[in-house]
Image (cartoon, rainbow, N blue to C red; front, side, top):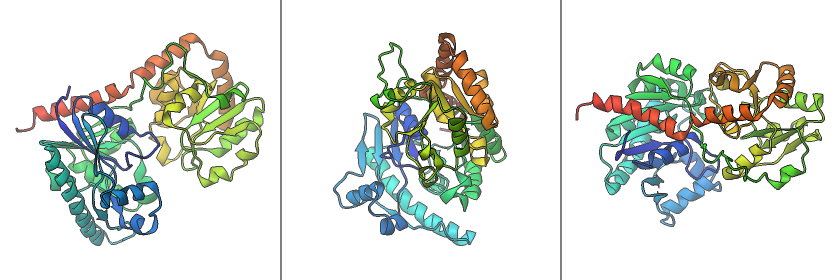
Length: 402
């Protein structure tokens, strides 16, 4: 057990982002016994100039003007830090030498702000935990000289969007120079071991206390009550990078007596899809994360209709544990990773199999199966997740000169 240490967490998402994230839950768990300085992404020049109305940018403007503290205490041990600096937007630069030169300048600005916070908080011998942030925070090991530098891989972010241009090269370098790499899936661990032998699969965490209804008193939201059973449900961001709209359309059309409930924000493709014309598909929109267990309780079967692509094939979908924590039968797309759940999840390779397995899940469900699912999810608690990181840290510290 690691107690009384100082952790600096580098996150690709702001703490104020309304969507729950692995690293926020990890920070809360670590802060139970250690001090944590949580740092989201600093303000980028392009956002400062072109996107100054979004909440994250407005928050930074408030910090710069002195209208919001740059250190925000969330509990006795957890502090969120908003760096008072702007990083240059360099992602479109193609030349690797020029990109790296400018990246170093950005990192020095970032590091100077962190060092001010470190001195103010008297953080000594701190451990950096970097959550898949290979383009912001890459040089912090050299600039901050932490006790340990840990890199967490929990998603294939280097394959899409902003990270697809420079992310792969810098992630490989980040893995290679880190003291420890932890991943939430064995395929990610296999990838990391190519560059660093000290790479370990530690699984994923789940808030089993939130996704819990031991006395049966958790209320099902009223808007579900008007939707008849059986209800097939999904919670999370509805985007076509990860989810297969055709599977949902096929299920809805093949079984018009089933109702599909989708809880979460939509991308443009989902908003324009034919799903909105189907009478047995219900879009309920973004909900506060604390409300989600009530929605899951109202599902008869939880589904995760993923596409199979390089982004999803090795990914650990956190929502699977959330569904299992509520005892729900789960039907999900068969990917390279999903065998991790063994017989506790029904795995479909085709849209036809989705229909058959949903029928099977409904008919086979029982109190005994619900109990087994809950027990499996409890073994994936945030306490166990962080405990596995602690174990690796202890091994490293035992062999690190004082």
